[in-house]
Amino acid sequence: MAQEKIQAIRGMSDMLPSDAPLWHFFEKKAIGLANLYGYQQIRTPIVEQTRLFKRGIGEVTDIVEKEMYSFVDSLNGDNLSLRPENTASVVRACIEHNLLYDAPRRLWYMGPMFRHERPQRGRYRQFHQFGMEAMGFKGPDTDAEQLLMLNRLWKELGIAPVRLELNCLGQLEERKAYREILIRYFEEHKEILDEDAQRRLYSNPLRILDTKNPDMQDLVNNAPKLYDSLGEESKAFLSSLEDILKAEGVDYTINPRLVRGLDYYNLTVFEWVTDKLGAQGTICGGGRYDPLIGMLGGRDAPACGFAMGIERVLELMKECGVHPEERECDVYIVWDKALYLNAIGAAEKLRDAGIRVIVHSGSMKFANQLKRADASGALYALVIGSDEAAAGKVGLKALREGIAGYGEQKTLTIEEALEFVSKNI
Ligand code: ATP
Ligand code: MG
Image (cartoon, rainbow, N blue to C red; front, side):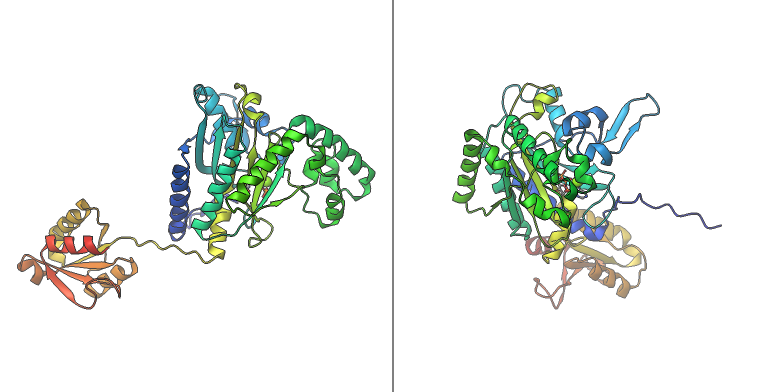
């Protein structure tokens, strides 16, 4: 009887080998730039206590209200959640291990996050983020440093230009004053508010500005601007940040409606947006979160950070025609059946020198072996045949046009072959 096939969970994908080169390319660039800017890696667990996120992200945010994978650990009754984002966890770890005790910290992370959303292009239930958190820095130089790094990353990935949208949320007091102004404005136009907006009117009115509903665009475009509620210090913070961006040639637009979903942001908020990915065009979001460390029980320290959705970035790389290739190996060994010890010995010798090798396995027909060699992307085939072996030699055949030795099969000692390959891969 045929067994029922077990499938992956909806919205949670396998990364297949065909996409591996794209992921590796991204990871190498992102980690390389994190190092270039002096950031260190941190890894936190995927499961945390639910209250970390409730407190850290805010009870009335979309994430906590309806997107979190929360469950009771049946073995001990603990309330746990799969992390929907990483900032709260990183802050928790910094407090727990006293990382900010003697110096500020520049940190980066990468890994899977989980949100129970409706799966669609660019929106998954397990997705991956790369992010940075700079803790103990007042800014705006640090805010700028992260934006410069991101601008550089888009270029290196081949997806520039991506649009930078920037806003300043001011401090809590300023936002409270604005909140009242905004509630009054929306109350006057209650008939235009959709269901989501009605629900958010008193819980999170700023988030209404973020609506994608076309029927509400006029309403939110004409809403009073947060900028007008900002004090001098907040305005000066924004303009110093703008000065650095201008001096470094980073294009941006001020989007007065950009508020971001999370409760803990202050001053700087930003998003990097592309038009090439349809509705899920925000590839990265971040900003300053000076209140968060205190909110989670640490000693107050200013901080800023961002998170990018890696799947969306990779999708954009594909849209932009970025197709990094990776060969499975440098050298593919084809061999005569009786000579398996020679083949394995040769392979290990090459690997000692850091050359990536696959020894053919499967059909021993010479033509089939060479077909597999070609498909592997290898640059060279090393031929372990009986004639060569009798003379204490191996055959070396270049597989791609344009690489050294193409067009003829060389007969060499294994040492000579190793030297030749090393020089030419
Ligand atoms: P959105 O408005 O698209 O829901 P968000 O404000 O919820 O995004 P953040 O919490 O700021 O997103 O996360 C940072 C980045 O992570 C987003 O800009 C996006 O690129 C990515 N991201 C968020 N949710 C998902 C998801 N469900 N699937 C894939 N990527 C996601
Ligand atoms: Mg979301």
